[in-house]
Image 1 (spheres, rainbow, N blue to C red):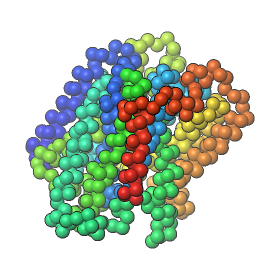
Image 2 (cartoon, rainbow, N blue to C red):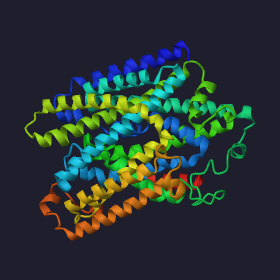
Image 3 (cartoon, helix red, strand yellow):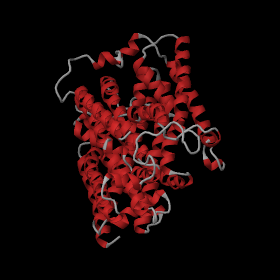
Length: 539
């Protein structure tokens, strides 16, 4: 890195922190302002924030690495999210906004009872600390170690301080404003690297799509893989069956029930803004395949003799392809990705602790006190994350870790939310039993399949069951427990269902006539058709 590159990164860090503080500080006079930006957010900002909160340095480095290793199939984590975001916008957002909730655990209390709310609140804080904050900071620190030679611990502390400062002071409004800026920077850096890689192809004798397909590995440019690996006879980790069955379990948990993500829609100015914001984010999820996975495939063609391990793919490409100045721009983009994920998770944990734990224990707590408690919570969580983040190196793969850790709790949470919205007969006893059962079996699965406890993964290696299919079967078990417990316990009273304005989801979806092209349902139909065409082309 040259002095120019370093200057660009430093300018970005100082500038984004100043913008965030200025945007949020003066307006956070109440807990609604701090946690939900005063419910003033428009759909473009919501969509951009949803997109950038999900794209971290883990994704930039990890998607390029897996593009190098296995190809386009890893892009299913991005494209399948499009369908899940449509579900968020058309089904879940109406329930959440009409319930007038601040947090997702609060929705569980209104639908069931205080106990599921407390369980969900604790899961939200722990998952945010472990995944969204800790692992993300570690991934960012590794990138800066490679670029600048800065020791991991100092990079961890630096990233944590910058993200925490304007999140604690600014609240959700600061996050939304800075997310919108970071979305542009993030995509710019990814597009620039992709274009430079494409321009370098002729030097390797690649002059057409046919040449490119001949230079890559078999199935490296296909979105759908067969059920079994023809060479080993074992189940493919990301076969079309695994993607079809397993991704919705992770996807609904992440995009429809995770506080870090859904909080953006809760701050919407109107129902239409919340719905369009979610659908807009679904459209943006088409892009990572072309600007984050494709570079990995191109890296295989260009630098397979240089790249020693897949995780180096993105970093090698930046060093080999980009001139001075642009290296700094992309480094700033990587920093933007870390910041976006960390700041969103910090604000969400602050919201959950203040609204779902403190306010439940002390209902008389004032708005000013809640904001103070939220800020203290964010500070405590970021300190814990700094100590936890170096343990990210203990996992076999960071990208694998962020998908496997949620499998401890995603099946149970997805089950409780789905049945809570789609089946009014579901009871509070069923919710508590399912959450406890699902968490227990999920933790057991995670521990026995963690390579750190042995040379092999029991479920994945010895039994040959991909983790996404495990998620599907865990969800099925949770569903059986939920339905059986609901049928054995008294139905919830009508007054409880009225608190969340419960109606059959299809009735909510069709309660008004289909409008023009700005109707969220019309946009969703068009987006669904586009995805079908893209899948057909890249199948």
